[in-house]
Image 1 (cartoon, one colour):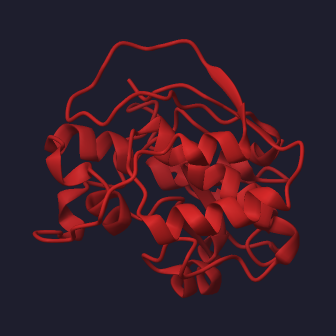
Image 2 (tube, rainbow, N blue to C red):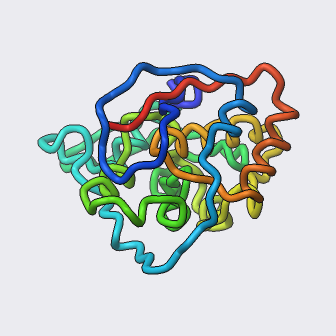
Length: 216
């Protein structure tokens, strides 16, 4: 089953630099969730991609599958064959950013819904290295990591929704929901332009709800 059908998970609490105990999931309309994002100016000073270790050994360190492979297995429309060393053969995926069907795992990137640089700008610069690694390999929420075409992922780069949106216009409600979910899950801030664009999208997504709980 596509992870698109799964519920999001993050919790509404203030920004902090350390992990907190798990809290009950909460559901809000998309617009209300966007308005719950802490508002702050972004600061990229000191950012290095290597500050976020990925991909790590994933959910099961003994199966040979790192995080990238686990996302590909979970998001496949038609499951690939998993061989020795977690080699993937066959399979079929839908890249929802651009509505493309992909039949080769090597043609897909695993996108961090909120890019690593954007996360750094929005609060992750204050995290420990261990928490940044947890963020970069988050298999606890189906919205955090998404398999998409390399072209669409590289077009997005490290841009937020005020700068880039999926070319598939039918994906906007989902994209705004998953972006907001990920920021709330990890207690990341939004800047004014980002929040305003998300609110614009939310206005065109009546009835869209997101459910979220904070990352451990």
